[in-house]
Image (cartoon, rainbow, N blue to C red; front, side, top):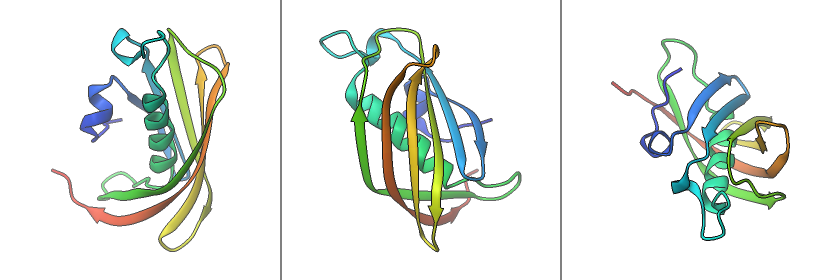
Length: 131
């Protein structure tokens, strides 16, 4: 599965599952992802949750043009710290309207420990061809 997102790619994020209404990303934690306390940076946690929610509502089938959208609102609960290993962000759509959709995501360690959750609303921006 190819990820057309330069920022996520630059962080070592891998899109491992993408289907209508769901998305899953994996990211091995590296030293560059840590804050001053040696924990996974909260901004990167927010990025992973945002991506999981956003991609869940923007699936395009094989041969279809990519769908794009923007985050309207995102609420995050930070529950536990992560310092090493791989984190897994899973998103799913709860409700889909004409242009707005509502989604939730969780970020867990590879061992299943829940690290953070998010809920948000997103606006679908249409299709754009990417070469």
